[in-house]
Image 1 (cartoon, one colour):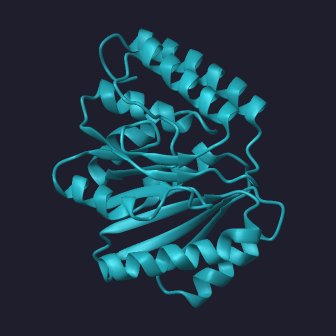
Image 2 (image 1 turned 90 degrees about the horizontal axis):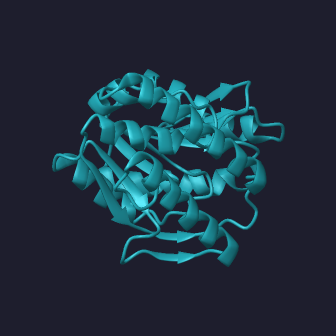
Image 3 (image 1 turned 180 degrees about the vertical axis):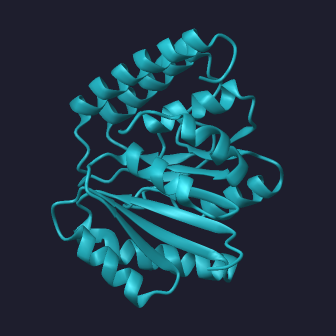
Amino acid sequence: MAGLRLECFIPAYNEAADLEPNVVRLTAFCREALGDGFRVTIVDNGSTDGTAAVADSLAASHPEVAAVHFPEKGRGRALRRSFLRSDAHWLGYMDADLSTHLAALPTALARLAGGADLVIGSRLLPGARIRRRLHREMLSRAYNALVRAVFGSVLSDHQCGFKFLTCEACNELVARTQDDLWFFDTELLVLAQRARRRVDEIPVDWIEDLGSTVRIARTIVDDLRGIRRLRRRLSAAGGGLP
């Protein structure tokens, strides 16, 4: 697709049940909001259900949809590879369940057009409206407080599955990420701040997907390991990017 303005990636792991209606909904929204010049790319990473077949079917029936498949499970790895292959002027991702309301997308693109290097959704800023179980809310707030304390981050929400950036910022930052799992989000934002990139947070409407396949305990352990690895890398790099 020539002159690609936006590529929106949908990382998908065992999302066969809901992938089709959500991708169709996102594609229709982008078509109405942007006209043309966009692509929705499903990033299947190690799915063991029918996600790959659904993704290929959507790509065959919708000209604005593409599908890529990685045999290994790992959201961060899949997004890094996909981002670095993109030829879009702006690129980013949304979770396959579309937990973040699509109304945030035009706002994010307007911020990029206005000079932001990255735009991220926040469930913790004033104005955000969320529905989430209490224990998930408490874990999220504790995690974000830890990231701010360890890395000096000024951001409120490092984990929301709604992030968009310019191709220039992508080329500088994404290749420097190393995490293959969920810590990829935090790592990208910490590196962006270290590089003095402009990161805009916007409040979003967000509804928790109760059918999510994310294993909370395992993710917490992986994130803590990611914090330790990144802290060591930043320390070794001194004042520069690792």
